[in-house]
Every structure is written in C-alpha cells, then in structure tokens.
Image 1 (cartoon, helix red, strand yellow):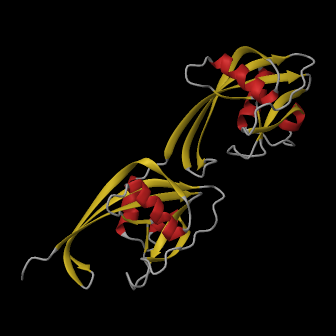
Image 2 (image 1 turned 180 degrees about the vertical axis):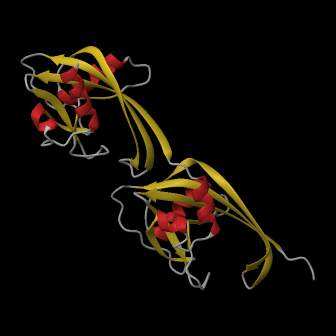
Image 3 (image 1 turned 135 degrees about the vertical axis):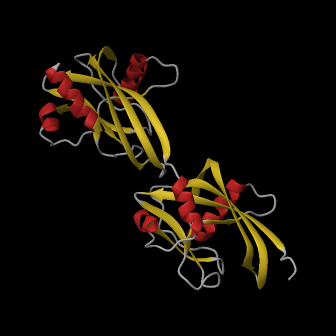
Length: 294
C-alpha cells in the first residue's frame, strides 16, 4: 500500500463563555451523521490573520460579532489515516484557540453561512458539555481543560461622607457591572496617582463637589467570576481603600461626568441601607459598620 497524501489544515477557534454557558456550533449532517458540537471557528484563508479569521468564522457560524484575545493556545492533531474528501489522507490539523466574548446584549445566535460545515449555533450549559451530556469534538474538551478566565484586579478608593443620619451614595449606570445598585463615591486609581488625590478627583466627577479626604478607615475586597460590561467573563478582584471624607455644608451633589459609570448621586438615609430598603454594594455596608463602630 502506497503512502497516503499528506494534508495539513490550519484553523482558528474561540472559547466563548458567558453566565455558565458556552457558545458552540453543531456540525452539519454532511460532515457527520451524529450530533456533534464544536467551537465556533474554521479554516484560515491564505494571507489571513488568525484573529481576523476566527472573528469572520464566528459571524458566519453564529451571526454574532466577537472580540478575541491577543493570546492563543495551539493544539495539534495528527491522524495518519483520516477520511479526507472522497478518500483518505495522512491528516495534520493545527487549531489556534483564542478566548472570545460577545456583547452582553448580543442577540440569539443563528447560522449565517449557507451550506457550510455547521447548521446550528447555541449557548449550551457548560456543565453539560464538561459532563459529556452534550456530544462535542475533542477540541472542545481540550480547550476547556486549559481555559482560564481573564483575570482583572482593580484598586479603587472610596469615601464615607456622612451628614447627620445620611450618607452620600452614587448609583451605578448601565456601563457598570451591576446597574441600578448604589455604592460609595469614588473609583479606580490611575497609574502613579496617590489614592487620596484619585479619590478627590472621582468625588468631583461623580458628585460635583469638593471632598476633603481624611483618614484611611479600612481595606475591603471582593472576588468574583462574572460577566463584565463588555460581555467578557472575568475573574475579578476588587481592592477598595475606604477613607473618611467630608464636603462643605452647602454642597449640592450632581453628576458631572458624562457617559460614565455613575448616573445619579443622592444623600441616602443610613437606615434605608442598614434595613435593606436601598440596594447597595457590600462595600457600603462594610464602610458604614466601620463608621458606626470605629
């Protein structure tokens, strides 16, 4: 028996996970008679950048516009006697796998390409994929074994500003992780910025008032895995520096920053927070406990 022809294929794919589900494409009946799901993606055209290729393939197979990571993993599969076209070949597949994400308000996926290699796209439970309840190609499980959510650590400074039985709070806008929830005025510290200076700047942007930043009361942190505003699943660690703060007696708070993560500012009764009538982030409750007991 003579040697089989050698065939090599280079393709790009993406692992796209959101809220415990993974975006997968089902292989068409002309590819396999059995139900089989795979990562969205496909062959790289001659001269095409792999990142451009996977974004193009995701649109064709799911109808969704994705963003993909700069980094990727490469998987190699060698089948010395694979079915290829109408015959057999010594087949070598190189698969470049990126992390991908789509907008949080993206529509339901649908196949756009006509007569392609996939015939359905869907968000499927990640647990069912990992357990084998959803039949997938080997690449899916290989990629998931190595997958790590994007890690992001953010250091921010916040102020506890009280007036009698009230505390100054800001409301998170639609650009934030939990829109509609209230938090302390403050925000991220820029590179090289002194925390107290950054806090005063943030209070001015969010509340339109000058803040006299006092003593550091405590350091609070939160660690969670969730969907960021851009739709990317993120392993998030927030470190919060909590300061005492004061504003002038005649200060009238108003949001100054345009199109930011704050859409309202208000003096809120502390009792509304402690008794659960106002939805707030944990850092608010923690800060108020410091102010009361400290």
